[in-house]
Image (cartoon, rainbow, N blue to C red):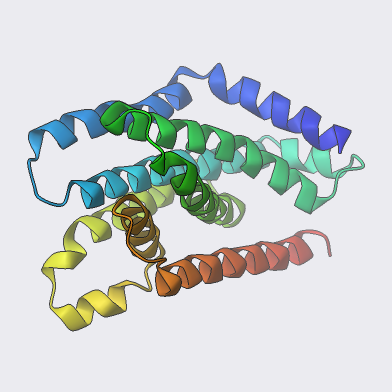
Length: 229
């Protein structure tokens, strides 16, 4: 446990001393304010939920994926595997450090647009789980894509695709909208929207997010077996 805490501290220190990464964390906060003020639409709660997703995707995917690829190329992960730490502990530590940054970014988006409200206590759970899911997606990209150039491209495409789907899917035919709920970013956004509008618990959407979370964990365990043969 002490070793994991040390890695988490080192990861946070490394991330927060990197201006590019700090820009990624702060950018969703700033962009959300401009867009929320510029777009006067009826469903403000859904728009805010979409920007929470944007923060999750940008921080979770754009930090985790390229960072893991960089450490693979520099053999940092190989060195850590020679320590008492297991593959799972290494991935967990790296992902948890990014999750802290993801939650900070999302809370910033919320507070800058809504201020401090009681909704944030209930919302904290779905934004943490949603952030964790997108971080795991970023980790899979980092563990599977071979080069940093390709990794940055795949991370960017994945992040943009997940966000853009949320911005357009409600304009599609109703039957397509129902199918699109299976896309993780759509379910994450709908859960956050329902919490903020105080609607009944989104059982289907919550189940889909949890299912995707387990799928990602299982796949990372599969990657672990390949790495530790």
